[in-house]
Amino acid sequence: MLLHPNVGREYAIGIGTKLSLLHKMWRNSRHPGSASGFFEHVYIATKLLEVPSDIEGSVGEFGCFKGLSTASLSLTCALTNRRLIAFDSFEGLPEPEQTVHNFDINYSPVRYHRGQYAGSLEEVRANVARFGEIGVCEFVKGYFEDTLPNRDKSERFVLIFEDADLPQSVRSVLCGVWRKLYPGCLFFCHEARDREVIDIFFDQQWWVQTIGEKAPGFMGSGSGMLSGPGLDLCCLGFAIRVCNESDEIAPL
Image (cartoon, rainbow, N blue to C red; front, side, top):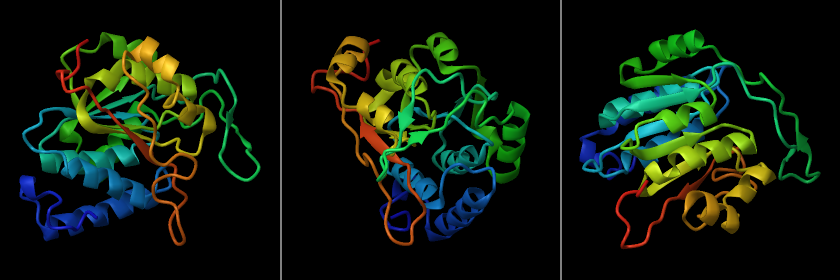
């Protein structure tokens, strides 16, 4: 995957740099503050390295926890000369508005609560400075529904990694950035095993009325993209922004 010769070729990234990146992502993913796994970090990094270098745009992360996934993303952003914009309340989750159920044999509820997955801005910055490339990062503090409407309308993204947990928060991210995502690029979601989140990506009425585009569907529904024997539990999946041929980048 990441070690394929074509991955990163446009950025002149060779095997030595890739092996170093893998080592650092392994370290970051094994840190007790990481809420995502090694193969998830690698998969996202690979897809970023496959974005053509002539497409301009930043990488957006929504939900940082302790900043370990942020650190891994920042390493890849530095290699591709892209900005990483990390959005988080830095106070944990807001109060959940609905119960979320996991796609498992018992269809069990996920016990989310206010303040869960909190990492302070100072803690996140310290981890990124230690384990990543903080020089490429911008940190945006606040709940998504408050911060995203105030962003520059000309802002564009070539990849998004969302780990917001709650359906209400995922909707806020989609409302704020989906149409800023360059066509053909990926919106990664770390709730592939959460039924109520996955339902959003197939809700045609919500997408047409709220986003102004057709529902994109979702790859990895129920089990994640990277599940299997010997792999960490995977919560990662993605949607692809597909526009009509007549569309420009994203009429806002």
